[in-house]
Length: 457
Ligand code: TYD
Ligand code: MG
Image (tube, rainbow, N blue to C red; front, side, top):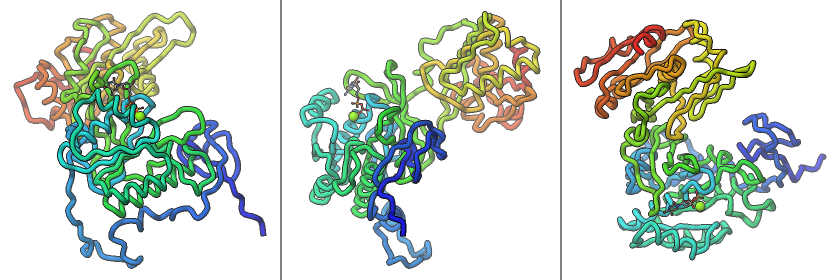
């Protein structure tokens, strides 16, 4: 009989397992991400997610009517922005992964959440494998007064972490970060795919078994052998990513998976001297400092989760000096911009190939909604003709390949948000306008193809 191999190759991006090395991971299509690691022996039950719940019934199938829900109580984190992304608060016994680039503010955010929870009478344990107690104290000094039952532990061995949790039985635990945790019975180094997975498995059993909420911090890494948080996405209940430009002060918390609420919600924070502060009205924030009467700038409205957000789309067209014009898209989909330029070329006979084009969503946010199409088109045309769009006008709508303007969802909410912020005119798909209630707070102008829309410039 062939001897079972002791090692296998794992993709450190997505955790794909393979018997041989490959240059490209077949699952996530990333290059050069396969690393060799020992296979975890007697791995702590692959199906822990299913059986590890508190209501284990000896493997006997049950009817849903026999399952008691208990009290599905949600605890507020003290931040409305975070509560909304979590689906109106923390669910007891859930496992939440918070991913993001190093230095983006994950530790700061969770320390602030711990402070809020401890202040409202909850027992919280913060386990750090990265920083010393002194460093944590320095950070805590910046974010302000901490009171109540908030405990800290500097530890990287998961056995010790498990013992501490069982002994203390807190309501909430923070693991900062999962890449520093290790289990002694696994041969590979901390941060490797098998360590990260097995550690999460243990934490999941603790969370589900004891009804403790566990927040796991995971660094997004581009190089090195450290496994990224995507390896864990399928194991946890909720996945949040903390994003933002390093040199800009605001941060966006985006929910990409949530077993207890809707995804696509975003929360906006600003990093200040004294920690993170919520930004309650992101539209105002994103539109502040907007140049009025400048060509190539258009205000659009995107729906993130359940909330409409106004933002500024900018385009710059410049005569090209090369055979192949340059095109860049910052904050939006590059291929979409190319497609829209092709539509303009074909349907409106603008010679787009004569121009280099740069499209940007102001403020460094990333928005990919098709409803931004029309705004991108209008920004391009406005820049090409060097004619400004009225700064009190907002534009949204999806553009199809024949130049038609298609309906978008939640048009009414978008219009309301624009009216609330004092916009005077809204250019929107005619199909949406037909279905909408009339309003006199803002002038609505329906369009059914891009030529009509450009005519309104
Ligand atoms: P941190 O939470 O340590 O990031 P992560 O845990 O995601 O690696 O955030 C570190 C950055 O935040 C650091 O560059 C300093 C900045 N910061 C502030 O600007 N103000 C503050 O009050 C705090 C605590 C940090
Ligand atoms: Mg940190």
